Length: 429
Ligand SMILES: O=C(O)C1=C[C@@H](OP(=O)(O)O)[C@@H](O)[C@H](O)C1
Ligand SMILES: C=C(OP(=O)(O)O)C(=O)O
Image (cartoon, rainbow, N blue to C red; front, top):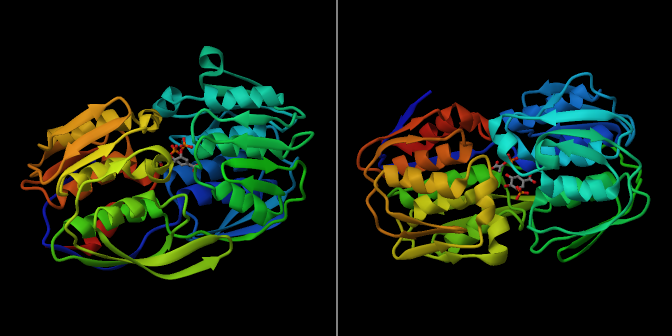
């Protein structure tokens, strides 16, 4: 499916975004291995999170949809998953394959995980190595570097592991495996990555000790089913924040957005760029904070982002390139080589698609440099099968001289099925 996006005169109204993708995945996973019922409200019915539901149903868990975004999971405890008859297919979801591998490493059966072409290219050695050290028998293409992954679980050993990159998926896979270990397991990250797993594990009753970037988990807790209210996904809200900042005469309210401090690097970036974003009514339902955001059109200026800021803004960096093109001065992103191993090589794809719409951008090994105050000419772009590239291009279309035609927008449903409809609702021509 192709979609044409053209310039609008303002962004306005009040909107809420669907549930957080990272939290939705984790609610299904931990609900599946807890004792008793878990209720999830505000679940994200996107392709990726539906893949997690499918996989855990194949592992014998009863997961029932009770309302449009509410599910009940009947957990039967840490060791009650069943050997699947079929290969488990995670579709496009890196979070599903990596976090589920941690849990499957502690099971007493064999399972095989696979996914789409993008999953087949993404690095799995980063989880295979620590899970092997813990005692799981895992194999995959090129000696475990790539999926499909074959996992024969085991009684695991507790380890202390320094992750080479700040990645919540590596950290979570090890912590989930640590539930099945013979003694405590410690993960040390170079910088803090998103901490939804730690928060939710604690909520379910696991014992964790957190000291900056060092997280220790005790094995074999009694996890108890919980009620989880999933806040709106900040990474989805970011697209509308960007739209309201760069389209003239805009005033937008986004309700119920998750504002976990390990996720809001984009909010910090736009504030540092002189963006007007008010955070209102901060509240907690359970362990995650949420708030309403009020955004006004702003005169932005360039910024340099690197180091520990990167994990907090990682999924929003393609979008940052779009708003940086409309800001005064230069924006530099460094230390973001991880972008090259996402659904696509997001440095390469954002650079190629920005160039197609007439924006000059320099590719760096670990980021990009973009000059501000550029005209976006418009043209034909591709998502390259990457939802976030598709949505970033749609936001560029709102301030483009000529329309932007985006090919293959169906992939947006990987994280935000109603995105184009919601964008149309707040766009005033
Ligand atoms: O744990 C998670 O839910 C995620 C972690 C991040 O990946 P990495 O752990 O590979 O950095 C992020 O890019 C992804 O969208 C979701
Ligand atoms: C990188 C992403 O997800 P995943 O790693 O779960 O495929 C994303 O949603 O941008």
